[in-house]
Image 1 (tube, one colour):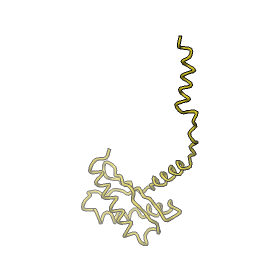
Image 2 (image 1 turned 180 degrees about the horizontal axis):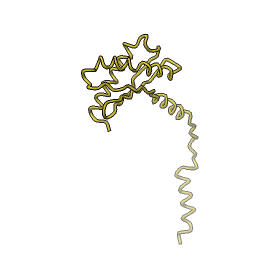
Image 3 (image 1 turned 90 degrees about the vertical axis):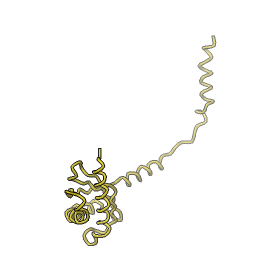
Image 4 (image 1 turned 60 degrees about the vertical axis):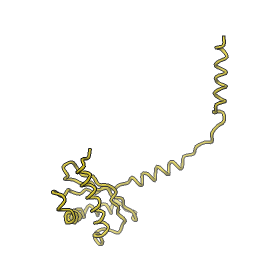
Amino acid sequence: MNTRRQRRVAHLIQEEIANIFQSDTKGVLPKALITVTHAEVTADLSIAKIYLSIYATQDKQSVLADIQEQAKWIRHQLALRIGKQIRIMPELRFLLDDTLEQAEKIEKLLKDIEIPPEDKDYGLDAYKKLDDLDGSDEEE
């Protein structure tokens, strides 16, 4: 269960890292559209998990590897921005967020499902016929 402090710190880190990716990474990271989708911090605020969506590139894993190589630089930039608001700067762990891709796969699967047309034999009339067959012996 996340405390209020954890949620506030995670939100602050998410916003500032998004700003860092938007403005300060030109020339440092490969050209790709990077979105910070979610951030979580541990109870002791020592580790922050940053979930990223990466677009406009085919090799997302290599972009994520480049980001992980630059984690110290990103952490330093984060410390410059929010260092006075947090006592200890958390270690940054970047993870690939694939929820959008999973949602697209599920949506495609749902669209591809073929639902057969409704069979008229399974309507209420069919059940009445079954009741008539069962009830004929019980009238005695």
